Length: 378
Image (cartoon, rainbow, N blue to C red; front, top):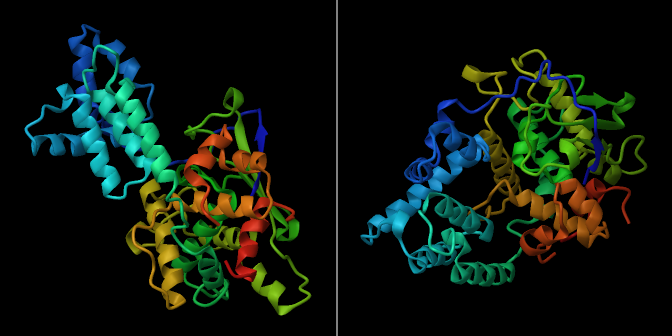
């Protein structure tokens, strides 16, 4: 996994060109919360300031979750914004019974708490029984943390055709390989990968392709802030660089994220219409920046393609976010310290990793411990 360092000085925003959500998206999220705040007698500008505490993407996500809850309540003749704690817990239990991740259930509860008028004790999410329910759900779900897919299958597939030889493969395959390798070796969220830029102030390759240092576009607002809002840099070292002492070393070098990233940047330099790292390969959108959701689809598509090329049936319900748990769990298993893992994955506390990401599974870096899985059985 990549070494993450913090740079205190902000970068210039020239050439950042990060695609953003349409302005109307901000007004769609949490309409019910706005009505509640309006009923409390707050002026419109005060309400807008209160709702701006959440990112536009979060407000949009809460809106979608709230609509699901509204549909569930409608089927049972329940008024969603006035329902009881018991109704909320029944809805959350339905989500758990359907196999939803605990992190997903937490988002639903946050959305409901934002839109519900609340109880005498505070928000619906602060109700004592709801809090106990969530603690119990966390314990129950944590017992089921098993790897959603096999890392060795995926890495072995990435080192062979159709993902190699890298200079001759289609741009689509090169893009999928690069996106997946970066997700695995940095353990970053898709939003952080989406914010990467090829601008010279954001990405620098060392001579000979021995390493690359990169950081998000300075306009990017991360989910978790470091101290003083500092910009995090990621430093990736080449994996088994030449000269090779054996065919196995040459094969392992095919998994080098620095090599893949450099090749991708060179292949896209003449067609790109944005400094955003990942751009579309489709003819009608070629060179244009992609959305965060599209990048998530690419990571999942890369895993599925790896399974198919190894004549394996891909698991059901794959998610791009699973790369964080997979990479960090293997890093811990290979002896990387919990402090290094949390720093790489931008976790302020090891509790998040221990509860939700540590799966049931003496290198120079975290990245090498993850990529080295391909040379052995899981």
